Structure formats: C-alpha cells, structure tokens
Image (spheres, rainbow, N blue to C red):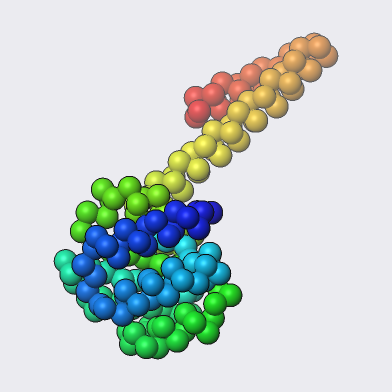
Length: 179
C-alpha cells in the first residue's frame, strides 16, 4: 500500500506539471487532496476501466474524453456524475488511472503505481505460463514415478526376484527415455 504522503506528492506534481484534458479532472484531484479519507481509498493502477470502480483521466496528448469512470460495468463520462459517485461512495476503493505523455519517466507516477489485480492477462503470456506449468508438473510426475520404480527395483533385488527386477528395470528405462 502506498503512503498518503506519496499520493499527495504525486497529485500535487500532476496538477502543476501535466496539462489534463478535462478541467473537472483538476477539481477531482483537488477534492482528493483535501479529503485524506478518500485519498487513502485511491489505488493508482493501469487499465482502471477493468476494475469494479475505476476512474481514468488523461492529458491533452491522449485521445478520448479526458475523464471517464466505470462502476460495476457501467461507464460514466459526465464529470458531475463521476464527482457525485466518488463523493457518495467514499468507503469503496477507487482504482485511478492517469495517462499522460512521459508517465513512465515520472518518478512521482512510478512511486504510486500499483499492480491492478483486475487487469486481464495477455493471452500469449497466459499460454506461456500454462505451458511451463504443464511441463513442470509432467516432469515432477515422471520424477515421482522414477523414484517409486527405483524403490520397487530395490525391493525386487532384496527379494532376489529376477523376473520382477527385469520387468521393473525395463519400465524404468522406458520412463527415463520419456523424461
């Protein structure tokens, strides 16, 4: 969780340094600065519109309306509605996204940016992770089977059961080739 002081530093810097597209965005930022309880409920993320309650403001260089909010899948673009929603639902977490030119070069922005738990995962990345997990679990399963066969081979040797020993040894060699 990001400290309140860091959030205030970022918002003050944002107000002074970035030309936001919507003047109402400045009103909302100032409102948050003056209401610490609300600011404590703000989480700065990327892809805020994927969250249950997300607000996006942009600077002049980013296309779009400049201010938009989503609340349980319902999109709001009217600044008065957005402000009203923030004020009335002050106990709920507000996921806040700020898009501006050079945002990833801003130490203030990076100091408050948190992971968005609602952000959809890139399908290629998801597929890669799934494949790596499947490979890992298959390898672990083969290791377990090999360990089990080794124990059974040792027991066959102790019992001097040549037929069982040869059968288990053959299975062990086949399984080892699959690894």
